[in-house]
Length: 307
Image 1 (cartoon, rainbow, N blue to C red):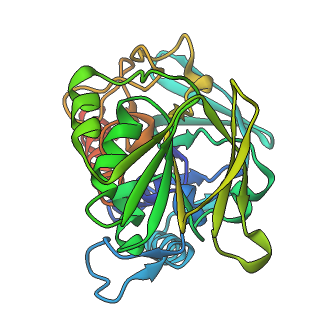
Image 2: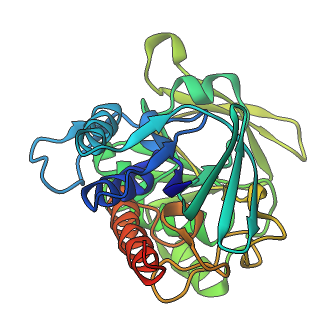
């Protein structure tokens, strides 16, 4: 019987591992197939406190992992297929067998929806991004494109005009899905141009390891064209990684885990942190902070049980 099992090994999961390990709870981290979370797809991270000159995303996650292990966290690769709760016992079923624990911290994150283009993932972190607040600074004075038509896309487009010389917003329809206030703000912004009824066919130039242009097609006329840009921000939404907990834990309408009083979920002993329960901030630093909260909440829960 484990004291704490943590599912996920991004900033939230590894911070939870660090704190629970320092509390002498011997946590087990199941890191999953995408070990390290979304920062593994990021090049330079300039906005994580303590790194004056920035740090590469994979290096930051390697440091977090090593720090958690230094204090006794056990980290295993594995794929979780089910989570069940019987009384005060939580069973986590993995491809290596079942694990029983008294408390569970869920840090499975969220997955950015992508366009599905061959060059998109190859250029992720090299001109293709899913986070304007993370990467906008690197495109100062450069033309960029934003793909999407909802509130998130317009929010990112408006934010990016602080840095970019021009922002071209690509949308599949001739009207936006975003709220009227967000639309009005975007239409009034002189740096934002719109490509209506269009889809992105390709992102160039993977062979050079940088973004040089996008190829779009008008869905009404069939006309294709190449738009020179130095960056592409995909803003078509995120999917929280919560399918494991369907029917077990309460979620909002979009599938994000609901938490209250810190990191507590609807099931006693089960806590959630990071992007799996946060669809607003989605930053490494906020994920790490919520990982700390989940660890402290789990520690207090175990103390209450007398463990």
